[in-house]
Image (cartoon, rainbow, N blue to C red; front, side, top):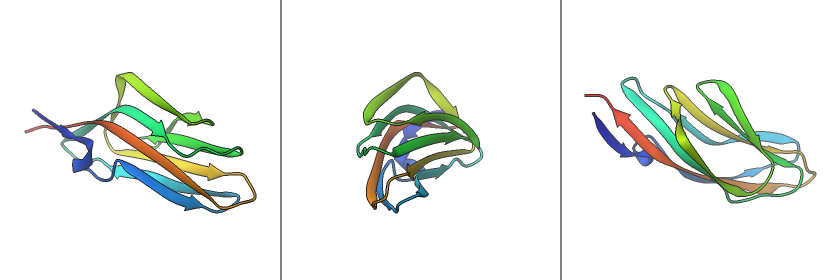
Length: 109
């Protein structure tokens, strides 16, 4: 078994423009068969009133964040199929919403 940085599966940092009353994926990482992602850190780097960040792991809603912050997970979340972080803009203006994540990927060999 070998561990690799999370970036072997895709971008670990992203900012998107989210229009008013829209929800949009900020991070969407598919985990291939034979791999396991361990999510250790989530950092919300753009926050505005009337916005929300939702975390989905393997299709299940995990948590909602409504403020800027750095969130460490110990033990880490285990992701076997997909990690999605969705930005929701309930305001009346277009906003940049950003997220940084960190962790490791186990590749079974």
